[in-house]
Image 1 (tube, rainbow, N blue to C red):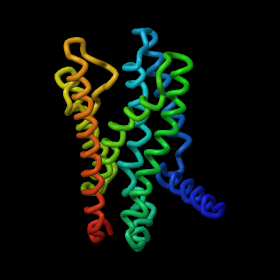
Image 2 (image 1 turned 90 degrees about the vertical axis):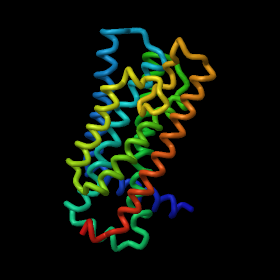
Image 3 (image 1 turned 180 degrees about the vertical axis):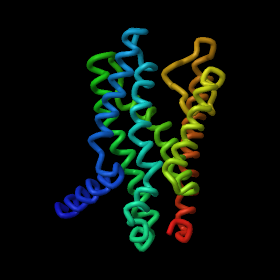
Length: 233
C-alpha cells in the first residue's frame, strides 16, 4: 500500500508540473493576488459581505487556475514533442488527459478551499464545503469546454480566444440571464426577491444539472476527438 501511495504521489506531482508547464507557483500566486485585488476593490466599493459576494470572489480565481491547463494542454504536449509518446500509450486519452483534467480540478479545489478559509476568517462566516461544491460547477464546466475546444482547434491561443468570446457573451447579457437556469455564472446564493424559494431552488437544480450534463458531453466529445491521432501528429 505504501508503494502504491508513493507511486500515486509521484505521478500526481509529475502531472501537475506538466499541466502547469512548471509554472505552478506562478499560477498559485496569480490566484492569490487576483483574490486579494477583488477583495480590496469590493471593500472600498461595498463593504457588505455575504455568501453571494464570496461566491463571486472564488469563481474567478478558480477560472484562472483551470483556464491555462485546459486551453494550452494539447499545444504544450505538441511543443514539447511529447504528443507522439502520449498517443503511443494504450487508451492514452483516458490514462493521460482525463487524469490531468481530474488533477487540475483537484488542485483548483484545494487552492479554493484555502482561499475560502481565508475569506471565512477575515470577511464573512459561511459553510466552506457547500460553497466549494457550488463554485466547482461553473469551473468544471468551462474547463471541460476549453478541453473540448482545444481538441478541435489544436491551438492554445485559438482556444483562449473562443473561451474569452463565450465568457464575454455571458457577461454582456449578465443582467438579462442573471436568474436564468442557462446562465453559466448563476450565483446560487443570490436569491431574487421577486421569486419564491421553491422556484429559485428549482432554477438552481436545473442549472447545476445542465452544467453537469454539459461537462460530461464536452469531455466525451473531447475524448472522441482524441481518437483521431492523425489530426494531432
